[in-house]
Image (cartoon, rainbow, N blue to C red; front, side, top):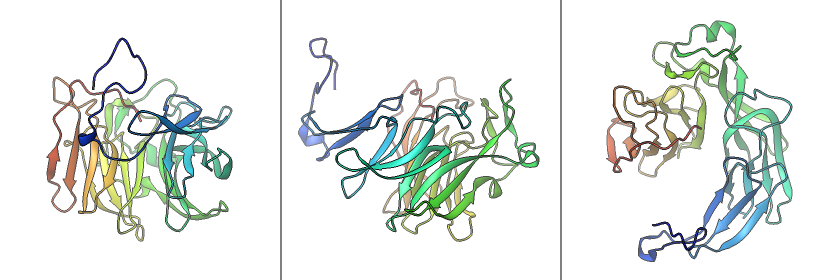
Length: 286
């Protein structure tokens, strides 16, 4: 892949034998209003548009787009990163066929086979909990600390279940990075489901990836501190391993931050393969 001064936009280079056949769905994560479906020739095959903005999206099996809108304008914890006014499902013609609204929605979501949807929510932590959380620094505009909640909602908006992260975390082990503020304890930036229908979560603030038993609410696997730093996008693989992107920012004890892709065995905590490191690390914040 290269950059051409003669063709500033569009497909620059392609090696078909090294490409995964299919389409690419992409959006502008910094405030766009469209989502695009692009083929291997670099052609835009379809476009969805929302006047509320499209910050992050998944393509559903029925061809609809499940997406996160821009943050709410008037309500919600506006100082926190990744907020959304609603999770919406758009049909092929960009018409809203389902939505769930809450000013405390943020970042990731997941449509379940049942038709229910998992969403991430913020909630202000009780003062007695926040006072026991270690790490981070207190900024002048940090009057309160928020924690992450995973809710399962039915198509009619009925709350099916709720998991409060702070009820299952450790005050001794789950420590906020010293270079992050205390606005949030965990900042969950990804939500996925395992083959056993348990939750796979990623907590950026404390560099923790975990699998949560949906029955008990407890972690049946928890890993990350000292191995990764501010990771993103863990994906549960068919072989029982987890593939994730190690962002590498704020990696303590290293003179130069670096990033990489890691596959970790959840039974042994051993890394089963890492891509070549990228230096310096990209500025991913979510």
